[in-house]
Image (cartoon, rainbow, N blue to C red; front, top):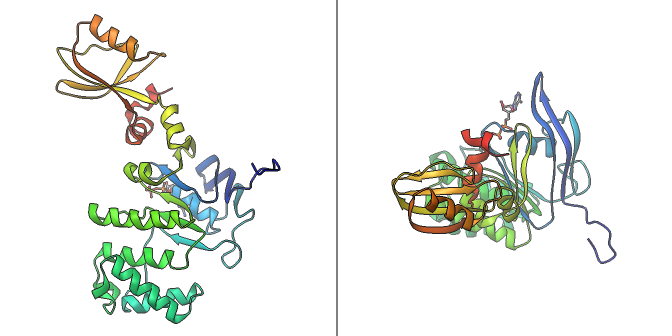
Length: 309
Ligand SMILES: Nc1ncnc2c1ncn2[C@@H]1O[C@H](COP(=O)(O)OP(=O)(O)OP(=O)(O)O)[C@@H](O)[C@H]1O
């Protein structure tokens, strides 16, 4: 709310979005918003409709029904917010030299040739590709090409950065480098929408998230709120002896002598511990952990979904 009490229009607003491809309904009824300045995690299993939603938001697909607005209106490429979009399908002009391709895109995005060149050289240095400036793009590895594509995406200092699986196919070191670059964009004030399957990236970067399932929202809110929706905490125990089932907890992970227990039916730490001891489990350690997004993801999309609600 503003000081005067008027609601602030979110930068992205999606309301009652529906998307059919012929007879197939991919998005059923999806509503969420993305506020200016936040980093928003767009999560869901393969084929749940994330890319479809982004394409409809950017006018690549015509929605079957619903409102998809950026900056209060339907997106128009050359009008409105400055956008950086890293699509799921990658591809740049592969027969040209890296620096030439970057400068070309910089010019398309409104930079002068000198600005595009100096920005690109600095970026190439940052992503450890300074020695590849004159190399043809198709001589670069897949990950190296992706670094160039991310550079092209962010070089116009976008107000809204939409990244469809930005770190897909990267090794851990380069993934961290890419995350650092995205975080810098966030700190510089960009609004970021990020599709990712990497929960540690979400926990590191995202202010709010949505989990898409069966064409609609399964969970939505800040990372802490989503964790709370899924019980908030779990109990990690080490023990000896058998571990019986109980109405007070669900075993969500188990190894030899250790297990994670998600409380059920309103049980708290004391109730779960008492239940374990009463049923003869020799508890060696008992700690309370915050349920991770990874765990939530598995519960929503894995075979235990039926036990959730
Ligand atoms: N143009 C299209 N015509 C028909 N079906 C489509 C089209 N585009 C997407 N789909 C279908 O819509 C569903 C959602 O696809 P989408 O690419 O949006 O999923 P996603 O959540 O981005 O998946 P992933 O995580 O695997 O990238 C899939 O079943 C896909 O086959």
